[in-house]
Image 1 (cartoon, rainbow, N blue to C red):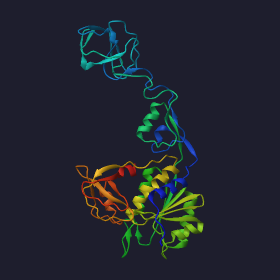
Image 2 (cartoon, helix red, strand yellow):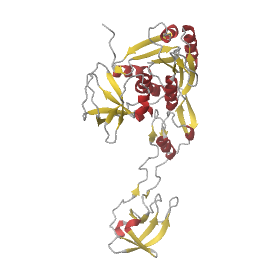
Image 3 (cartoon, rainbow, N blue to C red):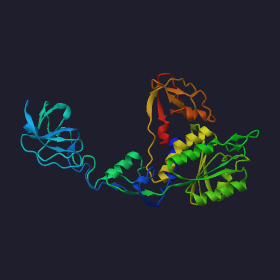
Image 4 (cartoon, rainbow, N blue to C red):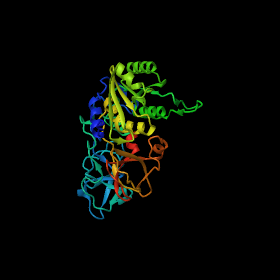
Length: 400
């Protein structure tokens, strides 16, 4: 009997168990922290908003003073950034969005519901207490943790940090990731191709994926199909990086030297995953560095990186990875080839929100990834008829 194929869940669990967050952190100006992972929580230094304030331009009043057809005296004008004085019975205050509610007022009437004349205002609609008022601290309360350690800082979270009063942020240091590529058939774009050679697309794809994650990249480039050269590249990579990633070269073929090099310098596990594309995945340790070996086929390398390597790296970065969001969409295709592996099909949504498949699902057709805007997840043994609902994972979820 052949070796049992592992399920995706089994492999993901093994990888995340092995992933240990980098321990070192640094303090940065908040404006330089985009894409970094918080090492310490952000705590609000004051209430946000600090005072009850107007959610609309209009007039602040006490609802007890309202009566149909009654004109109220406008006693003051309150703009954002200024504080008004208390209003007396029978008075209203002209107020603008974000301005503090003056003492004595308990509602804001929208200016669209008001008629103004010299020094007075008529409020045409009966107001209710609390209308169009943002309460002090309703966004953040002083002392509240507004961002937890382990959150990755995107523009929205940087805005929250600023609103909380944080000028500096404590973040984990960047994860150092080294990559190198083997295969004498691979050529750097721009160089002439000899018979039997192809351009190295995995180098461009994987380095871009790593840069998109915010890793500190060590691109060691192309390594000859030679055991001594592979060992030397791996030796350098393990000294310079926390994680070493390669694609291809991990089988038992005579020209596949990566597996032998890793075994010489550390240890290795070869996992065969019940998924397509991307059956082989290698995890190991080389000195203090993790080692990840991806399949050589370009689509397989891309999908395996997105589904396995990305969450592993996020955890190593100190983040708390979550499964990618997915949603059900109707199929605009027929799938009558039930298999013994879970399949991820390159797909895009049509104008009616139905999933259509790229006509060539080969793991060597990288153009299908650029064409697609998501992956359809087909379970083991599943068939699909047009109109049936299928799980769809947007590529934006896998690349964000």
